[in-house]
Length: 287
Image (cartoon, rainbow, N blue to C red; front, top):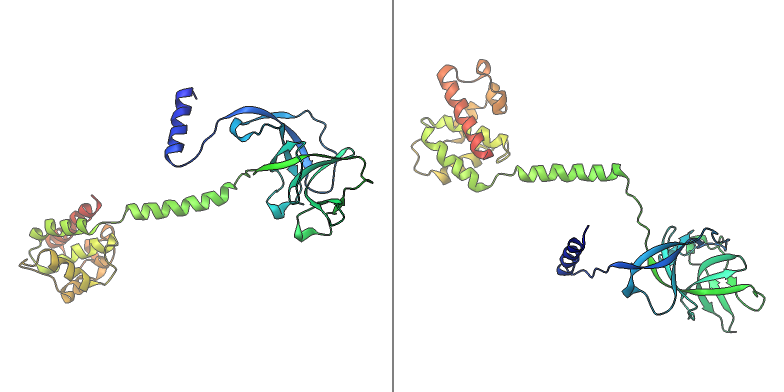
């Protein structure tokens, strides 16, 4: 991706109300510090992570990946990254990174009435598992590294199966919507077909096509007659519910694609006329 393309993407995001920032400044990333009981930090040299310069303060900062769930009540979960401002002075309620001897931990910071600082885990469901740590003169090897200023959430991969199910549902809905036929289409189709209907019963072909395309429901002859009368009120052969219902026998009771002359209420030339009108109506509704 070249500079021009990056600028175009930034402009699109800004126009949409976002505030994009370019990750162009490297800071160290340590793998990893436990948000649980203190554990020895990784001895692997830190990687470097690019972050936007605007997000950095004037003080030294580093990124640390957290493991464990002792801080989940404040939104820090296993795998999250925390940005730590080094050597910052903590205030009560801050989340801090503390080294105790050769071990490190991320905890919330609290000072009691006697002025003694404490490190407090934040997992109300597992209170017995994580200890509150007292930081007083007895903890001579404790060192407060810095204050957590930002949490960068880990992005888990989503199971493909769950996405597949949602996509399939969306596709079915989309395809159903795309197949929806507007009333304008129906109106136009009725007016185009009308001159070919020389006998009232032949409107049954129009009825069957509209049922096949879910314009009307099965056996709703009344609505079919109303729709036809509304579009061609002066037609010489307007349908009646009784006449349409009489044609709904044999293969004519099935979708047009399954009509069979051998089991139809009409034969020969008359059957062909009914079939041609029905197929023409279907084509008009599909346009």
